[in-house]
Length: 412
Image (cartoon, rainbow, N blue to C red; front, side, top):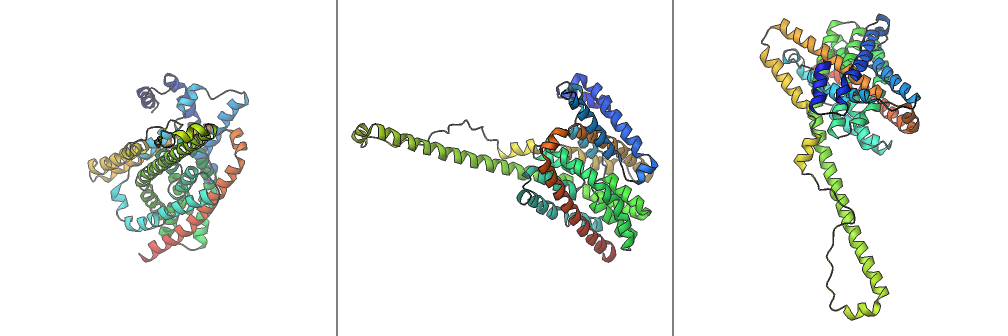
């Protein structure tokens, strides 16, 4: 894994790419310790997964360096490849059509009916009511309603702001733990069937690992299988939603750029008019003499140099989340080349998921390395608003997904 990633760094000539192995060993060691802690029986029952430990340890490493007044070393900075790790993790999520087929209609009903609508409504509430910046609100909302960190990274890449994903992911990773633990007991109390319960967990627990953990606490294999299928169907939304967001945000940027140019042009015309009036006041005699011969001055370029505007398709390609191509290719290859051998398909799927989880853990370590205590103290209000938005979104998601799961797996 490390050698392939090093070749990736070398191919794009990333800064400090020659020292990437040093940073990768540190990040991998932190991920390994996180995995070991997550496999502890007592900690596993408490739903303290590898993602939580990875963020905590990464955070500790970063702020220990800050205590000595040192910047993040170059070998760690180049190994902090959050977007790359999560993209590889997503590409390796092989979608097995044969597993999805029996439950697909009901899983689609649970996963896709409310998700796009609630995603946009909650994002709108975030930037209009809570005054969170637009991109962060979209990232947090998408991560809450789709699949946690994977959706957050994909949406951040689509809008060209991967650095804004760190805080939403950290908040979601921490606040997901109560949901993982509480939902199975609530499902038992409400006397939901195993399939309804599994669909509920799959639709509203943010991460794939958290979904399986919650279904395991519930203690029924049918619930585990149903939750996994519903989560897989929901994960498929990452691709089209990322592409749609890339297109929408590109159009928004072009609109803002055109508006800025119009305002600059209007400002330049006003400045010319004021300058002409000043000249007339200073030289009124000369101005009166030449007034009949003066020709109107056409508007000139603005006082600022406006950057040449990209065409819509160019901007869309820049924003396009490239992992979607790999995600689609992997799914096509998996479902067309392995035949009908269930054991082989299961083995490949399990191995791909295992490697995918490792890359996911590496991404969480990178997220922790990006969280600085001083910045969090300075942005304490914004942190409070993000927590508020997440709690509202998660509460709505739990309630509506529970209702949809009950309808789908009881009456359909």
